[in-house]
Length: 545
Image (cartoon, rainbow, N blue to C red; front, top):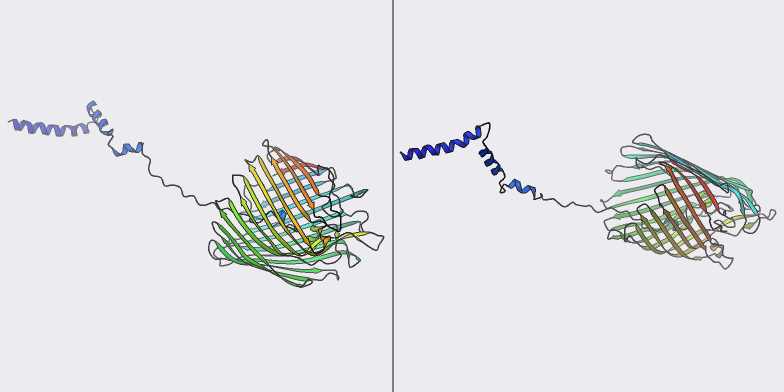
């Protein structure tokens, strides 16, 4: 009998919890039991409150740094003119328009305007115009006053269309220089005018075995007055057809091989100046690895007609990057420096063409250096090297003509070389301070001592920009050029130019500025026997739109 009672009691105990779970309203006891079961610390889910899931460490790719293994372009000697501007893609957020207009105490004009039209996602049109110059009385180096004026106008237009696999480049520019000579000069005034047109195609298809950037440019340059072959000449004209191509193929992701070709065809209207052609080839190999950068090439340059010649120069660049911000580099380069009308104006606009100059050839320009960035914002560059120039252009002493003892200036040529060494320091701190200091010393050797007349021995350049408050920029700079001493003449006074500029932003996109030049009121000359302005100021407005 007792066994029946035990069996009945066991059945009741087993069925009771099931009935309790079916009830709509649980009892207090049942709810308490359920809570206790859910709060069991041994449940694995509870540990997720205190244990983080495993996280893979981020993989940071090495930062790609592009190093300039050359020393500052301002150290290149002799310098060349800036090439014609061809539009490139710009950031979409950049303001498309820029305008600057300033006027100063010597009749100085400082103006520039530029606007980029984004016609579509694949079409860009850029227009630019500038006017610089002065008109005032200058103190001659010996005695008297000179009513001098010099105005230079430049304009340019370029168009870029992006096809699916290539870019089309079209462009043109115009330049006009108007100025006068000193009273004792054979000519009273001078005018240079140049125009050029460019068309080019650049491939953008990475699947092609060869990539190419091909350009053709036609330029016309005229000079109003010259003295060629002891004769007064008018409107000397130079027409030049420039054809260039850079064709290269990728060997792998780190290296490529290619050849750069450049041909100039010159045509003149003066029988005393011969037409001629130059053809320059530059085959090269490039390697860009994580630590090593290498370029191995050579310049093979030919001239036909006037100045017939064959020249070969190296084209080698080697750089080793370590610790991400330290770099050793060595270079050995060279090549042709075409002495066309444009470069002659750049060398000395006051010099007359008495005879056609042959092209200067840089036989060797080699340097070795060390660049470092030991801390954020600071860059150091120490370098030294050797340069050799064949038929280097130099300023001769003024030539006295047979007509009323009037004189003209002319350019000569000789072989020169120099050993150089220098350093560059730059520092930037949180967009509050930018500082640059560079200096270079050259020890010249020349075949003709007259060539030392305007050669720089020591060149120092200092520039700093300070932003004490957000709308205010204060720029201060100093340029010092110490000339080389010669046995044949007294050393010319050094260039000593202290200059400053203050810009204040009135509101976003609009600023006013005032800048001063030659603040020490020194007497020096950039071109032989032609003085520069004394203390001079220019003030105006700048607009971004």
